Length: 315
Ligand code: ASP
Image 1 (cartoon, protein in one colour):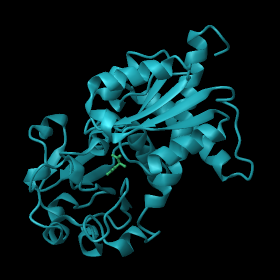
Image 2 (cartoon, rainbow, N blue to C red; image 1 turned 45 degrees about the horizontal axis):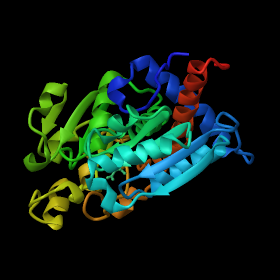
Image 3 (cartoon, rainbow, N blue to C red; image 1 turned 90 degrees about the vertical axis):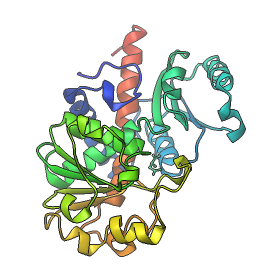
Image 4 (cartoon, rainbow, N blue to C red; image 1 turned 60 degrees about the horizontal axis):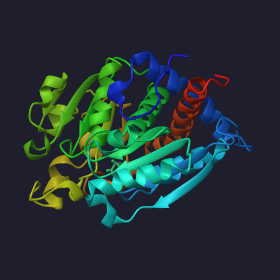
């Protein structure tokens, strides 16, 4: 098995073959999740704790379901917003939890790097469920699985990532993953939402949707991360929608069979036209949610196997 990590902290640590291993295993879990009996036993007897220091709907639900389907005891900790500003508290919380012997810790935190720091302090496997604007590895993996299933491959595709690139961990993890799998990536955003120096990552940069979307296979829209903006990054929601919101007219610049993605939660009429988001002939947004559970099952399964191997048990 080519996946030897102790934690899943970011796509930057994964090799191409490891990404493929994880996606292949996730395919098995897609099948299991579509069956009437959805139970596996890969995590039987293990304890999974979800610690979300930032709001989440689909990611937390998805990790919870993934753990339960594989037989883990899953606990959701209600993390208070007040505890997140104190660096000490994060480590204290980690040490307290560590003493309870969890096997898997799923962590979301508003500060970039906080999850890596926590991983250094505990004995169990840590999965990054999103840290600040740094990484959101399971999102990129579920996006990759969705693309691979829709397009039949995950290489040599033209993929446009559009919107609030500057504040997005989804964009960052996707740029790294899709680049490792040898795709051509185009970033489309107003200059205020495009990180400086980004073209060094081997991507093409556009500030115009008509130019950027020309002949792409995949259009990935992003949410405006207002919680990470401390000023006026866009003139108004209306103006933003007019220039960067995806509607049928702008999508017509892409290939006729281009798919439309959004990680959610989406702002209809700001980032994307509501009718287009619901159009099952173009939008794979619901598939992304489905793939999310399967990818998280695969990730926790692989980490649990590695943990058993480290402890000298059956691999
Ligand atoms: N759910 C994704 C995240 O946590 C995307 C978003 O919130 O816009 O980063």
